Image 1 (cartoon, rainbow, N blue to C red):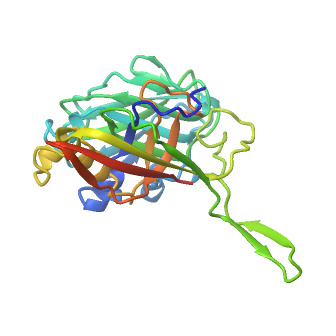
Image 2: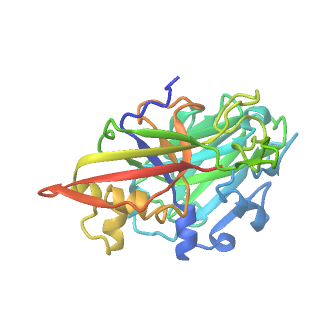
Length: 329
């Protein structure tokens, strides 16, 4: 257990949402599927950042391979896709279905010279022949780096042994890049549990009664949210984190040229990664309390930026900042 202790945090930032928002890709033209799932509306729903919105891919009793192809429209190998990348499959039943997955990339749309980058498991994965086989249902997170042949990416899902034992079901897929904070926050971290869905009313006689429009995340297809466990979670409340970072170098914050796309994409700095890729809170992201601790149900927060991030210069080329995060249901 990590007890949600914050050391040096790490962020997993989805690329699909900002690429769609910028018009770099479109859902029906650049995100496609082959095998079991080919309906455009169903495929794009896999990238809606809603892990409780389960999509049934199918396959029970067959061994039909399923691929989900992403044309990033980023065709320069030195751009963002050469950065450390990640894939998170949320709300899945891959263990029950007896399924495994891998990542392939190529600069050719037909994957005629497909590359299979080596995956590293962060949560819920065991590797063989470049495939990750989840040990449980729930969610899985892997990382990889592919510096060349990387315009086209595809997720390949295969049966782990023989035929699938059940229809494959997935809530959401996060596909993007990572950002590791340069250091741990100051010790004045503030954590709150907000019950913004609870309303308490008082009658004319002074009696109070309450109702709730929402209390916590809804369950996923097989497990509690952000867990590999099937028992009902007793968690309630929306977590809010307020952190301050002091003595950040300007090179840790800003890219070498904020308005030049390749500089913003390849520089591993706070503004082009955490702010630009989330549009300052428009898109949620996965926050890891400690980059070196990754228990599947205790080390992560699905959240949004909850403040306008400002930087205060405290000495020559050195800044401080406050960052507020709010849990996403």
